[in-house]
Amino acid sequence: MKYYKTILVVVLLFLACDKEITPPGPVPPEEHLFYIGAAKGGLVKVFSVEQRKFIDSIICSCIPDSIVTSLNVIGDDSLLAISDNQGTYLINLKTKVVVDTLNYSYMTISPNSEYFIAKNISSGNNKELRKFDGLEYIADIPGLFEHFDNQSSCVTYSLFYGGDSSTISVYDIETDTTITGQKYSLGHEIWFWHNYPVKKLNKIFFGGSGYAYRYFAGVIDFNSDTARILRYFPLIEYMEPSISLPIVSPDEKYLFFSATIGTFWGGIPDETIYVHDVESEDSIGTIALPNGFVPGGYTMSYDGKYITSKAFCESTSDTKTSFILIDAINFTVIGTYSFGGPLSRMATKNNTNIGI
Image 1 (spheres, rainbow, N blue to C red):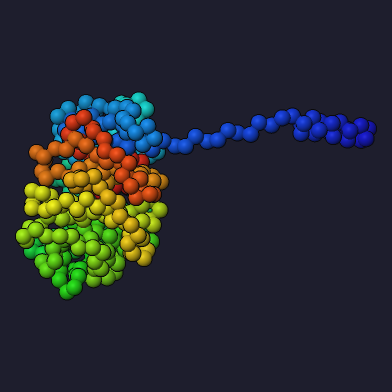
Image 2: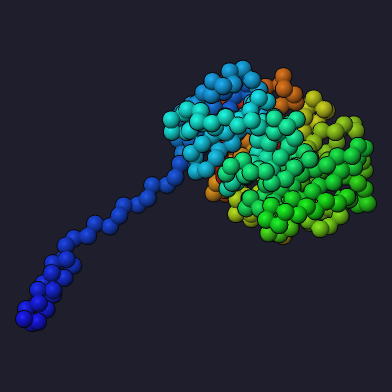
């Protein structure tokens, strides 16, 4: 009996092995989507990198004619958070329906979508760090230019004291500790503007200014009081035209920065994005910008392959209607695209952005 059972098992195994097995097909590449909002009102257009065009639009009727203060993606292209000074509205990106309203404005969302920083409208517009889960309070964020690191483990922000003096603070979410200290470069106190932390290297890349040499791109270590200068930006007749905008790729290998030089302030467009190695801080390349284009902020795709940049606006009455798409791997500009009207905020999943 055992003999026949063995033969039966062998036959069944042979038939199973003889059956043609169709291997799974290739997984289609994920589309890179950028969400670009109008300067006023709740219109948001969806731009596809692969198709090089807008493929969809969303209208948030909750803000018919308000100035949009922030735009963020929550989760894996599942929710869109659009804010004005009255609150934040969460939109389901599949149904395009507002599913929740939060009593917070000017929202900044962490790359992992676990935390946010925003003004609490119900408590005097105090700027707070909270968890999305249950809106759990974590800490006050009393400064300006707040920014998460790419690992969503810390927040940096600037505190200004008048004159040419400021400090830059690091709040460690995991340990609930804050590092704050006066910072210097070449013996002079400096102002810290837009910044981007890299916690694993204990570094903060920033745009700074100081009395002796005005505007520059720099880097400082968490526990240091002395900054290192990566690049100075030009001055025109003692004007103050340049604020450096740094952004770090999601893998934290590359730093991209440029000078936001306003012609209203007497500056000349630099028309260049500078690329440095994050760890060594060495220059590794540049990206030539279109003639006359002044970057006003960046958004980088989740995989670090693409960057979108809107044009810089001198004031709320100064509106721009175009943006550029950048190949962040080959350091080239792919093209310039029209929004069809004044644009303001830009977002993509993982929320890797600066200045917008």
